[in-house]
Image 1 (tube, rainbow, N blue to C red):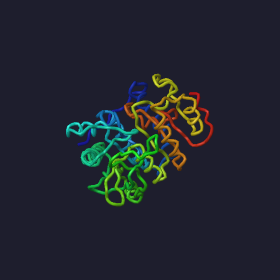
Image 2 (cartoon, helix red, strand yellow; image 1 turned 90 degrees about the horizontal axis):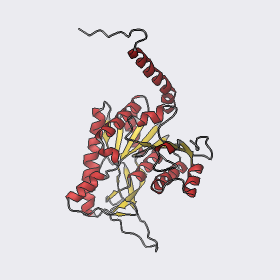
Image 3 (tube, one colour; image 1 turned 180 degrees about the vertical axis):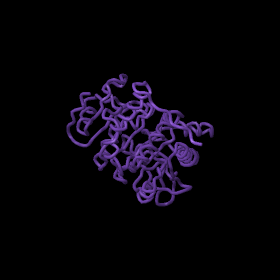
Image 4 (cartoon, one colour; image 1 turned 135 degrees about the horizontal axis):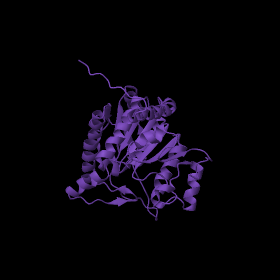
Length: 314
């Protein structure tokens, strides 16, 4: 026998709470309609992967997004998990111009942690949150193809990065088919070159390549700060909205702090290649994805293509 639902009493606190929740859904309706059937690429990495509660709420948000008609695609790095595994294997962690030096021994560890364990765990967690996901790695279906990355030092000589690459091609068909079937693609930041050599890829650049390939409406960087700030130590100095022109000007004048500059520059390059909006949000804030996309205020920084916006002084 089914249990009867309880009734709200007029003027009760619980009734008002229910009305407030309904108002929130109504506010979200316009945004849900606007972003239905559009791709959003979400880059996961850093501290969020280390925070079980924060990661769970991000994944719940992603399941919600897919349920209401968006097509989320997750690209993830490995970060601290890779560093720990390398340490346990007695392999020194070394970064060269922001890239992890990856010799053959390190590459094996990176693949095991990033493209196998973490990738499969993220897909499993999406399923446990009520969604459907497919891990796309070398053991299932690889969708990232590329070439060895060549950086130069100040003298113009090529720097040895080991097996580090950059994405030159994305198999969009696989991603499309999964999204149309209601699944969330989970993609590790590794690629393979023409010879079959596996390469370690910076997760930010991998996410931008995927966003460009699928013609994403949005690219989201899940960070451990709440966005671009005028003062890096003051969360209240958050700039809610920037155009690419305004962002370049803030970099030129030094208003954007040094650590945020590479991420903002990657955002600007992505806008130049057709992605319409970039978002930088704090993944530690509960339901930050939903608050950023489905409320009028947002909680992070959005960067848009173009010249002017009225929000730069926020």
